[in-house]
Length: 196
Image (cartoon, rainbow, N blue to C red; front, side):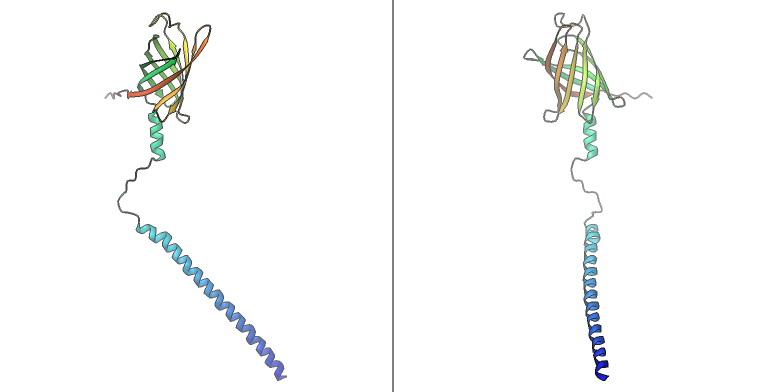
């Protein structure tokens, strides 16, 4: 009986020893994990805070807000120059006045070129960087051979390299249509007067 009780006691001691080993190993791994997490949190929070200056540092990088302002500036009311190409020849530049309405996204304008006095009406998109406009000539002005009281449909897209709008034009005479090219470049803004 004593030997039986000894065996039971030995199995208890052996089982207790394994449990102690698992407790020590688990505790050690837990301690290592906690130390690692502590180092990680320290580096993440405290080290970054040490590098934050107490004064603003100016690093020039184009922000989304600046890009939006730049886009908005592409559609400024003021004096523009327009050139058009047809019959294998460029005509212009001619100065015109354009007004952009940011509420309705409409553009209106007026001016004159070698054909005659003209008015312009259309729409624009800051998102697409595009202008679609119709140029209408006033009969009895300018060149009587070229001016047929006709319309010219113009589709322009922003060309960032040339810093201007470029695209196509479609001249609608009463009997036929003639395709061409067109360029539009901003010169200066309208002066705004504030009355008191």
